[in-house]
Image 1 (cartoon, one colour):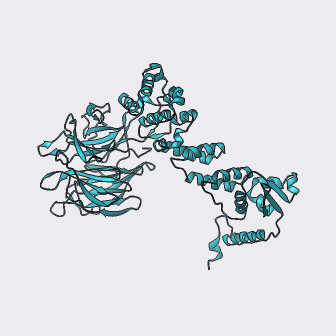
Image 2 (cartoon, rainbow, N blue to C red):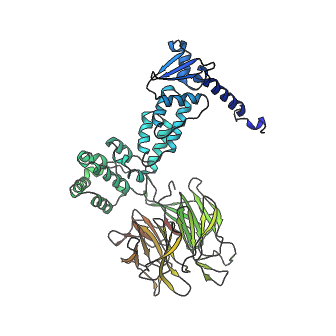
Image 3 (cartoon, rainbow, N blue to C red):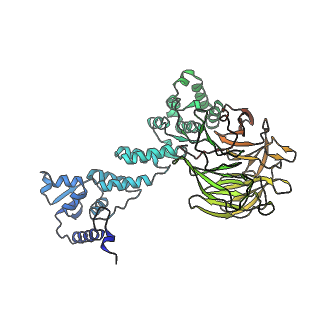
Length: 561
């Protein structure tokens, strides 16, 4: 039997005593013992209770019973316009029985709690609404919270709407917003979007939902878009792709008017797309972030350890970095250390080490885990590997995937629509064109069609549900060749060659474009427009002086960095 001192609440009350007293009060109420007030709901439903308990949990009843109002002297109270089953629950709450709240009754329950000034019930309803937030209902919850003046729900729902903008705009609730609501939403500086083009796409969706009625609102909606952060090509592409010819012409006419362009607000939002330069191709621990709004490289906290040929990925808003090449001549049996960057802490920490010895491996972030694929084992005659180690950040555990069908090092990886792709590489005797994919649901490796050009030490990036493979080393040396893989057709297509060869290339995607960076401070950053199949020299500034390369990664899910 538990000791009494073990059952003391933090405020000094005995939990056992409180439980016993509530049980006794509930029994007395069931037997109508010492009940001194009768509540009649909607003239039909009768509830017996004790005044002192109702007054203790409801400011409404406390004021009623402690004034000169007629009700203070009556033994019968009439309450209308509250459902009897809800009133039963609210009276039960005074006797220590928790509310049963669901999607069907939360609105009426909250209204009743506000009317009767039951703070405990209000808080329970607010908690339920906050936990229920979803892209399909958050706009409605926000509107409801404003009507009922629930500030805690207003704050939570507002933040949710900012952070889940893209998903929300695919829901029916969004298309039903009024013009004033759309203007407020689109004008908000706190929107978290991958790129400003997402706001333009959503504006077009809203307008087209009822173009006949919303056509006069075109100017008001377009004034909310930050067009200075969208290329002209992207604007035209969005309009052509989503709009009928007559609507496209209306939008084009509006955008071509210089007086309209001057009205557009140039402020910044929380763009979640960012490019990071982590580590170096030379031994270093420096880090940089590219600010897409100011077009400048910003210094970040340094890695704990210096790394060489760093691999980087992101999961749940955190960056992970590891060296894929020995950092010194001393090769130990311990694998490389994996570091994590937490934007809330603004620091790197070592969280684990590879459980197996491998170099020149590839890294891929898939759902909730980080996979380390292939490479070669320097402890066993530099034998090539087919093994795959997986680290689970939330569990801080290592597991394994089934071995690759083919051993390989220097391959590249891509994760697209639940499928992990491993492309090319070297098996120790030849450069590979073969490719494999791992289906997360079937938990098995499958062969897909080979690349047209065998290659190793190349890069891959996902854009518009296709995989683009760039550069690397082919049988004849470094190559400019670019190929695109379409999972729908299981086919590879040749694209426009890169203008130059970058031996230490890095590739990122931003705003549906591919950017090719070289690991030095002098080479220009090149941009590939996948829709036009053309290369351009970008306007990105050079890396900070004295900074020698690194690993670049597009981290679309990392907010606040």
